[in-house]
Length: 300
Image (cartoon, rainbow, N blue to C red; front, side, top):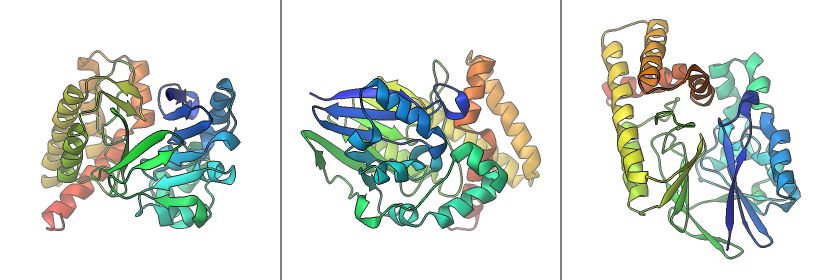
């Protein structure tokens, strides 16, 4: 029988912000998510706790290609692992220059190495595209990819029996804090996201594994709360978008809005800081503003 271990990657030297999940069955070892390359040494250290090295990993299952989930995939591929990824995301791992340049426009070139480390191409023979619901066997383990857009068009949730590794489609929940939706540009699509939540619930999972951060044992209640906050955030941004409020003022006001929600929920300032590392408020402003602009233009 397989085991599931949560590996804490200590993003920016903080615990409980980004996880990788190690699933082992006898001599077969799989990672769901790799974290960014900037946390590579921590990933190696976490594997060592289980008497493993990167060379022992047979496969990496990526939920999507954002750097906090897939940035170190190239190093696992170089160590011999096959990398399973949505077919839309696959070309960006084979040739990551455009992906890197797009992120640099958002974060600033000076911040890229500190946040994400580096990213190099993965040989195409190591990259395996996933088909929706087409089960992948690794040793005695059977993983089923669920294409789940809404956060990203190239998003995949991974099902293993009644456990589902949800990437970002099930939101962010750190320690005892609230459930919140990560809404970065460019792919936020509220209708698709809600359909993806229902798709996951239709699998009747017992447990969700969130990259940010850890296991959730009440999937239906969890998604109800996520939908409520997603609608709240989207409506808050919509009001200010329609009012023509300057983006910098929207960012400031939205940060106050989310901080008030966190404080009301009893979330400590220290945990609020972890949320901002895992899911910066200004990123959700950009993503939701883009959604409403496309909606207004009739492109969604």
